[in-house]
Image (cartoon, rainbow, N blue to C red; front, side, top):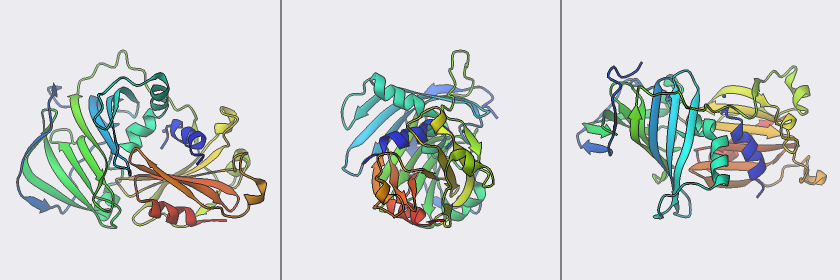
Length: 334
């Protein structure tokens, strides 16, 4: 399955483009004291990691379909205006010992840091959609993450695409721990903060820069610039709204990768991408204008689908069931 080159270009694009008064910074394990639960009438205040100046270290775990796990220890900086930096300190598989990544893995992670910071991590991107698509339950016990007192919420997916659990800093509204599940209730991925600093020093931080700039998509002019006509997305999936359309002129910087048209959708919590381009050179011309079989995979808790539809090469990426990605791909029309 030829996912690597296209997906690499997709991720390197990096578009998918109030502080605690005492600046308390500490390191601790996640802890809790059980209590009751209550169904919330309205969403609590939850802030994005891009909206608050912060330095964090966290442990990220992904659960693969074959039962294997991968553990990453990452170091994050955000300046509160949208700039981010995410370094991979150590990596481990299963019960193996954490070790610094090799040069190749580190480069791939570095090129994906904007995507990983903004779209892999759980974030409430639309309050109305998050309220409509998830039932919010609050645990009434006592919780803390990295020494920070937190509120714990369980988010039940109304459409059954998978629930979530989050722990939110009581003072800043920042998500310090989260866990995402598939429809069967099995974990897909999770993150737990190990260190939080609300008064970071950005003096030596190198901010991530998109290697391929995105531009707004205009159906009247963009098709000629991209060199192909994208298919129209008729249906966004249960609870998902089209958040933005853009184009990525990848071919100018990476001649072997055709330009991309990108649909970004959100249900308020999850983000899904539907990308299109002219078929790669290795696709036989005899197959270009008929639909071939779609290939799928899951990596790092994220589902990936790709295939040829009505003359365009299409791939969909998101932390939702593959079946739902197939519905998205099938709704692309001339």
